[in-house]
Image (tube, rainbow, N blue to C red):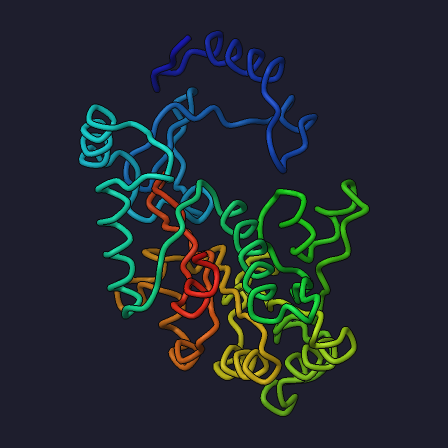
Length: 317
């Protein structure tokens, strides 16, 4: 059954019934969908259309990802051309589009990076957790470095491990218990500071809390720190300018990987002047041990893990 944007209550209701009887939706409460729902039939630019003819401004750009707008015919044409030539082959072999895109990304990053392509943001972070452990086993075989330091109220995905890495209790509770490999610390949430302090007189108490946690867990057990540069779970929380550079200093001090995992401040989503979140906090680019689970946000484009050269060299064998 297909729908146009011409209002037809009977057809719309049939689609609603078909959906309720067959589809399991993420995040939303299904009982609420029984009384109120949007049936999206098309989109153009920043506007989406309901089957009843209502037009909506898609203020969140889907899930923070439709950076260039809906209805871009040129993307459909490029995708169709590639599918005709080569729709799929395992990445155990090389192919032209992946090589060209990785080279482009490496150039935008300033050189010295390799890209590992995956299919979603959650998968990018899952790959990152494995890469961090693999790297630490190679570099510190005498230690058992497996823990990830994350922040409360963080969002890193919806798989079991990425839910554990995230810090939103209401999303995690129904899936407990978790592995215990993720340790949480206070976020840089200045609007409602968890310490009841004010910036800048707080002297970045959240970073001190992070260091205390590393010492309490034992630096020899910690593989990485994972951060959203701009947190989405508490609205849109931008940290103080010094926050990420100070976190990077902790990583250097204790030989810990720094994982940049933006959920909203993604490539192409923060303006051409700051194509990469890392460029918003330029000093952390000096880190020799960094990887990023950046998502390339152009509706349904590839997603990648970007590894600095020292990390890539350590795991290449």
